[in-house]
Image 1 (cartoon, protein in one colour):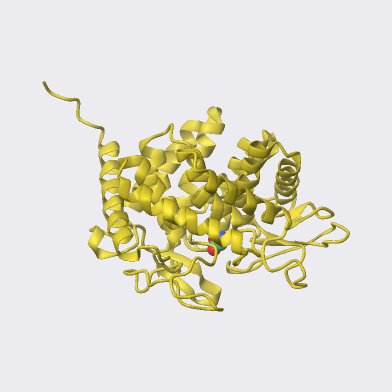
Image 2 (cartoon, rainbow, N blue to C red):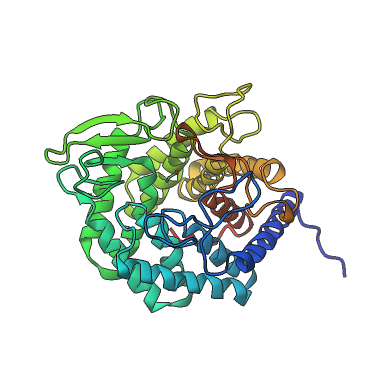
Length: 391
Ligand code: GLY
């Protein structure tokens, strides 16, 4: 019996997935229960998270640790191999400990952290301890909601005058934890916070030309919108590539959650601007002010996030689905061809050439935990269009 050959693109996707799985399998063995650092060094190896502020080397701190178990959950869904599930479950338990002990929780990034580390196993395995930890984290996140401004404060503790009333476009990706908590508990306050926060970002962080500010300040007492600024972009009024990608994906996910058509329009607007500012190979420079011919570094992680956002947009926007899917496929093919290590042994990262924070000279032209995660999520979405994301 002859079998029908797979289309070339499907074969490429399956090959790319196989390479990622080989790296994840090896990293499970080498990292053990510890957490790798945010980025690789010299594009090759992830050192363990350094000891700092009373935390031991490899401890669960910062905003990126959940991307590692997030990859393990996808690897488990793809293969059914116990090694991935067991490693990810051990991390879920550590995230339960982190929230219980109140360690490093003064951040809006609780959404990134607990959606991947704990909502995923709650959904996939019915893990009740992970569910309780995620609900606890959602409760902590709600404490950052400033009712006058209608926003969730991004950084710092709430008494930090420099950060008070400030949020950032990345925060859109933290809202799904609140949406999940609203569904789990029936408490409408979670959904109200999502609706108000996302509406404020749509009105103020999205600019009239379709680009976005990285960060925006409100007066926390009067609620008055104050000004946009950047932290990781080139200039206050430039368009940080990863922020724009968070906008595509985040507005789309929050449209799915709230049904608000204005959020779908915002995601489309972010996508149009992003696609119009890509260089020929479809992978953005770290800030969208740079165009073909620039020697500025690329941010492949922004490309991977945008691919996930475009696939999400395709599912939510049937009238334009072909356009979004085609754009996502093109960027993903370029990432797999030219931004992934040729051989799994070449790097601990599965996606090379990302930028963490160029103005602070951190993680330039490196692999990053979030770039790796979203590259694998993008491949999963391409290979299994009916896959249910953890967001
Ligand atoms: N959410 C932080 C970053 O994208 O760098």
